[in-house]
View 1 (cartoon, helix red, strand yellow):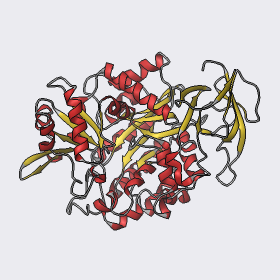
View 2 (tube, rainbow, N blue to C red):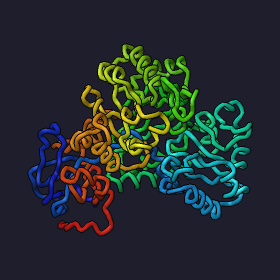
View 3 (cartoon, rainbow, N blue to C red):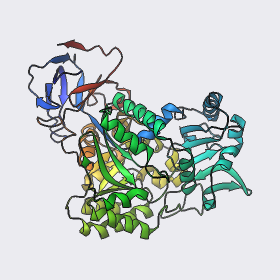
View 4 (tube, rainbow, N blue to C red):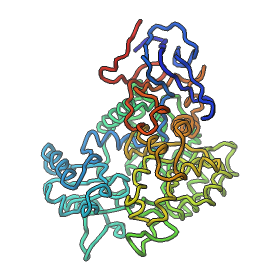
Length: 525
């Protein structure tokens, strides 16, 4: 749609402008010149009859990895594999279409969901059975563990990261974590042409899911050579006006000094592409048994996880970001990691010229009551992923890795909300999709994790907009950017079925960037 105005009428428009107890609505909405023009109806160059469907502000995924989304679609998506055999068969299919000697890549496998007896990571021997002529790398869903075949182990330089190469009886199992994963990522990083391809696929998928703004988080690695192919892809797409959704991105800590030297503050750019600040990793993940705990892993006694950056480097990076008034988004999952990050944030806050740096902790899965209160006092944003609650059921990943206590005390969204911590929800691409995450937030197994429909929607729209300095997004109010999603059902009326709701259309800047096949929408004009 190329017109300057668009009207949606005959449905229910939730503006999310008020509080969850008010829930203001309208029967229709008019977009004009890329912004919300009217909530009381009016004429437009194109009018769509919603026929009772629901309109919400466009979703803001506050923590995603567009390259992961796109490259999984481009390579081997292992997220739907129900068991080891399906995962290996998918990799074999990829190998059959890949020239000998070229990498075969897989993304998103989750052994914790596989049948009993299969709940260990993929191994070197299994991947050797797929191919011995291709190097193979299959990345776990959390991105903190990769399984390699023998050829892959030989192809990647793992000197100096021996502690992150898992072994049994002195032999490498094929599973590597943390710093060794960085080496694998560097060895398999896409060139500029492939980066542009996977960016386009990831951005199209975002639009299909009703996402109108994505905050892309730098992964664990960035290429050693000058420039990052993905950054180049973002800027080339921006120059060509080829981004169907809005993107803000956080730069890897290894490139943070260059950003700080240029004194580029958070929000530099426009409403299509902006630089938001610095991304830092403080610890690993629960799935890879590398989150930094205040105890030990229940299924790996003696292992309390690990820091992936030392405190001096953390403080140096934070100080440089503060001098440039950049936001910082720090991955911290375990209680020990969260404590270290909060200490560093408190230390660096006085160095900011702005009184609103919007510092973030990514994930905060195991935050204690004291840490939650401290986040509220420091006004640190909790950038959390409600889809992680898929592993919080009895017998799930949290219980298996951490024991009974943490099954009830992980990802406590309700506790965060009640303490006054600002929530910004995202997916971390596990899986990509706001409605899946919102469903888990609303239907979480424990009270301390559960949000109301209105609270979850606001955290996935207004909360994300705030976290990314995008205050013109997140609600449907006159003058704000015309970003919206049309759903086939009302999540307020179907709270137990939110993950089954379909996206009918996605609107960015008043233009329809995605329309479902056969959406059944009556259009005039």
